[in-house]
Amino acid sequence: MPEQHDVRLKTLETQVACAADQNLLDAFLRANTWLPHGCSQGTCGSCKMQVLEGEIDHRASSEFILTPHERSEGLALACQATPRSDLLVEPVAEVADDGVVRHPLRDVLGTVSALEDIARDTRRLVIDLDEPLPFTAGQYVELLVPGTEIRRQYSMANAPADTASIELHVRRTEGGAATAGWIFARMHVGDRVEVRGPFGVFGIGRPQNEPAILVAGGTGLAPMKSIVAAALAEDLVPELWLYHGGRTEQDLYDVEFFRDLDFRHDHFHYRPVLSEQDWDGANGMVTDAVLEEFPTCKGFAGYLCGPPAMVEAGRKVFKRRRMAPRLIHQEEFTDASDLARR
Ligand code: FAD
Image (cartoon, rainbow, N blue to C red; front, side):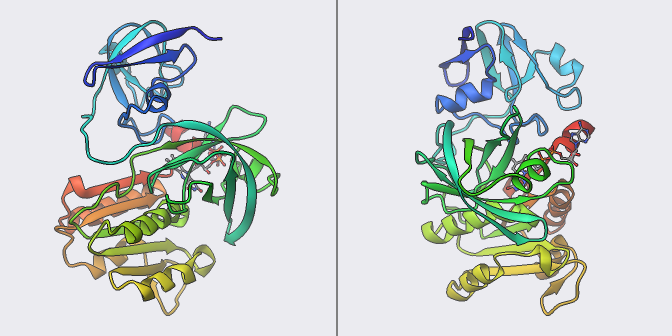
């Protein structure tokens, strides 16, 4: 059994035990002590911490996300750093009680119960869990690629009320370890899968006064499907728009599901958008469709999820339409190539 160290969080006066081979974020989330974080893979930098006392190992932290200067100032990435001694730490981002219900991080085993091609290079994967895994809409899990130590992040698409199984939407990446090498190659119904979660802060965690505009690219639709389900079931927002972008109709999925919701709920509006095919729906970049429909986004909240370039374009559109920066929320589907570039 690896050596254990005590890690104290100065702000909350909380202490957790952290094994020498366990990252600090994992230790705190497992103990249900909430810490700011984003991708859990070292690409976003949201989980930076000040190490006030003690020694850490930065492990795989990239020098782009955590510069040599920051290291010399005692900063660390909580999702990467492991303890070498007892520690006193403090997150860089404020840990405020925002009223959102959080769920402790856990490892759960599950069985693949459905595996379906739903769009170009896109699969819906349903995993029945051995134990319930409560989460908040917008959060994600990590799957362990069998026979490796590789973990990859996938957002839950099911309503958070369904805790017995998780629905994931996975896009194939050429040369990708988890997708091309596993989920699209050798995964079968009945396979056992190791799941870790929930992670992440993306989503509408509690009722808000601002109407919400959700913009998804590709499988960025996954967390949005869960958010829409929660928002409609729990009356979280006064009005809700969902934009989903793809190149052609082959890239869209769950279209009838969302059209039906749009038909049944006056305050939910579904907008599929195609960038490379003329059709009877909207055409162009999904973010430009928002620009066209909304003369102003002042007083709205925005949620962006998908490839980093789409998320960046969406931020620009929301700012151009005067959405308050604090009301812009995003989840970027970064992968190993982004990590290598940074
Ligand atoms: P990887 O092995 O990560 O490879 C990706 C690409 O990088 C490949 O082209 C590969 O050849 C290249 N590459 C690998 N290593 C290197 C290197 N060292 N240098 C240069 N290039 C390299 N995806 C979804 O489809 N659905 C989701 O719901 C989803 N949710 C996510 C949530 C979060 C918070 C994050 C961070 C990501 C999410 N993703 C999601 C992306 C997902 O986690 C994976 O990154 C994606 O599926 C690719 O994984 P992979 O193992 O197949 O590819």
